[in-house]
Image (tube, rainbow, N blue to C red; front, side, top):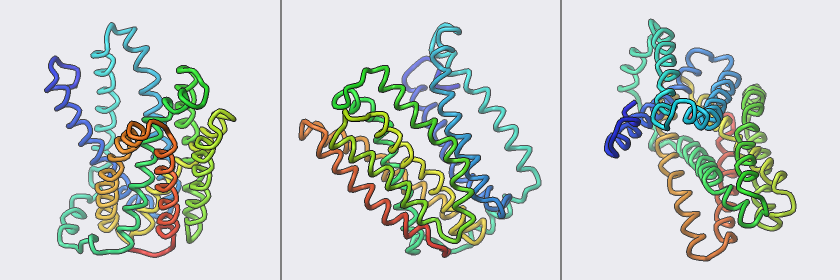
Length: 299
């Protein structure tokens, strides 16, 4: 609500508060899944990821019509406080008597994962897949318009297709991957799709922008497996909380540099070849560390 009040300081402050809330929830969800659904980690992580993608899609799709209907962007954005309040009510009711406070108290006395090799492998895997996603979401429309031969409207539709692809994959793949001892094959397979999409955009961008976008969308769907891996690689809820905080904290910090670096390389070189070579390198490393993260072992 602060973001819709007058003044740039309130806009920035409200954004920071909202982002902090989203970050805390993102770290806690793998813990809730681990402790509440230990036999259905893949399925429930998939449901959560699909809901996350659906919510983002609805937010992007419905805010412009709300802007028109309510007479401005401020009431349109304020409308999204309603589902946030409803989610808070549901969370409060569900958490009542769940014992998370005791778990958090016990966790303060536990070991650190900062010296754990597997924890850092998972962190790098999570960070690199997020970096790739941030770059694609931020830059794909511009790339498609510059070298793919598509219009602004078509570029927007192709970007929306990325979110739509993630919905069915998030519901199906994590549940299937969690049933097997290792998730490495799924991670490598989805990463290979993303690699094919990047190579297509680099070598023949105008050949089939739709195909390259679909392949990129499949590659970006590894996000659901990254969250599943966090829960599967920890034995207890306490370790899941630590691993989730470490992977998402350091991972998103790494990912935040991606869009800036991609744009900087484009400005310096005057083209898209070097930025895409950077992305391809990132994805190759992501596939490698993801294969290691998917092996059946614990932090």
